[in-house]
Amino acid sequence: MLTCKEQVARSSDYLDGQLSFREKLMVRHHLMFCRNCRRFIRQMRLMQATLRAMPQKPEEGVEALAEQLAALRRKDSS
Image 1: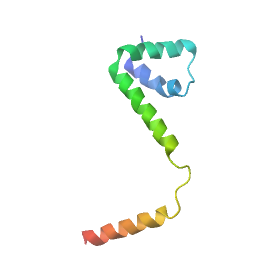
Image 2: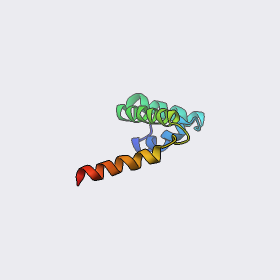
Image 3: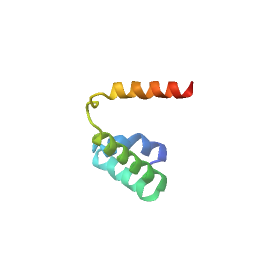
């Protein structure tokens, strides 16, 4: 059975479907018995989904808005 450290090292490849059949079975076997690694995999899946949902290109005017907010914050803290 894999250790948690070995499981974490294979997590990205597992989620990307890049493991061999044997390695995939080893990962799934470990996940059946390790609640912490199951939680870690769920968090990684959520992170991947969040990153996929983000726009590829920044929205128009984001830089200007960030500068305005920073200026307001500097003004308020003075």
